[in-house]
Each structure stands twice: as C-alpha cells, then as structure tokens.
Length: 174
Image (cartoon, rainbow, N blue to C red):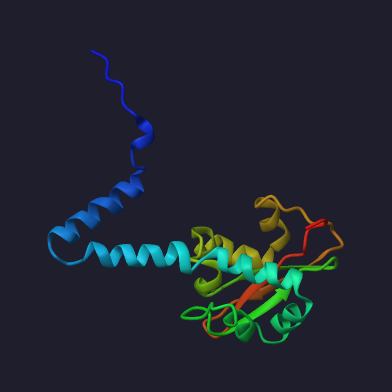
C-alpha cells in the first residue's frame, strides 16, 4: 500500500522542536501563547534587517542624513524610531571605493538587534570570530565576495559598548 504525503507541510526538525516545546510549556501554563505571538510579531515587524535597510536607504538618498549618521549614528538611527537594547551606542561605517568594512565581535556576539535583527548563527561562531580578524579577505570570499587586492579591508570589533552598522556603497543606477 502506497501513502502519498504532502511533504511541503512538514516542519523541519528545528521548527518541530520549537512547536513541541511551545505546546508543552503552554499545556503546563508556563507561557501564554498570546505573549509568544507578541514577541514573534516584534521580531518580524519591529526589529530586524528591514530597519537597517531603511537607515541605509535614507543615507543613500539624503546627504544631510548620511553626514549625521557618520557623526552620531545613535541619534540618526533613533530619529527613525530604532532604538533599544543592543542598539544604544551605534557607529556607522561607510564602504567606499578604497575601503570595505567588516564587523566582528571577537569576544562574544555583540550585534545591533534593533537595526539588523538577531545575529546569524555564523556571526556567533568561533571560527568566524577568529578568522574575520586574521583573514578577512578569505572570510569574505567564502561568503561570495571577492574584493580587488588593492581594496583595503577594515575590521571593526563590536563590543557591548559600541555596535556597528556598515553602510554599503549605493549601487549604480539606484
């Protein structure tokens, strides 16, 4: 007997574990599903990379804002409504024809959640944290970015006191 299953509706192992944990905690009365929904909504709509994209787009289209972002990134970013834990002290660094910027937290995984969301797994991984400092060109190449040999790479070490936002160069025609 053959069984056809709709595999598109199956959860990946991680999502299945999350769902099982949420179900157990809800059944035991330890969490409120509505509270979980609020947290998920916050990370999907209020915190995350779309905020950083808005900051970058404004810097690309508004020279006065870009200048303010260079001088006081915390205030400039806050003016767009993005502030909070993990984003209190920001510095913007701008890629240029001469320099490409790379951010790493060598001690842990300091990351500006408010503008970039939760840090990706690779950002927290010890191999990235160590290699980004000693072989930034090689690390970037592994991510698919091969820079010209004469382009300087500046590595910034993020800390609990200061987090960075890299403003990429504006693509031609955009």
